[in-house]
Length: 192
Image (cartoon, rainbow, N blue to C red; front, top):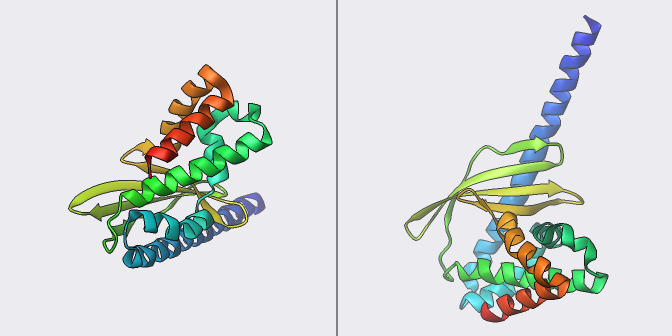
């Protein structure tokens, strides 16, 4: 009887911790989305939006972890300088791509669905987004380190990290870190 009580108490404590985690992660995401909306309302164009929104996105997105996961196992063969350069380029690319999807003054209508906690320290927040008459199902994957940070975005069932990993893996196999960085430089240049 005592062990059943301990088991039930443990499950309640775990569930409570998970609930608190999902609430905190969702609160952090909503705050960042609100900040981005305010910046978007004041931006003259997508280039200005990309510059203005960068500090907010750097605080909510773990670009270093995303870059490492997007590159995959080859990341260990990058020098420290190459890792930093790749992360800086990937950050710029993602922010420009994100910003180019929005028209200044217009912001999507976002419906937040019930967050899920697949494992402790990780939360997935599914959303339904309506923007310019189109619906999108987007899941924000977050992990807790110092604060909750986005580590992947799944749009209509397609993981951003998995998509980039396919691309970067092929480039890495052809020319190592230099090929990945060269490709990132080209992508950043063409995103201006």
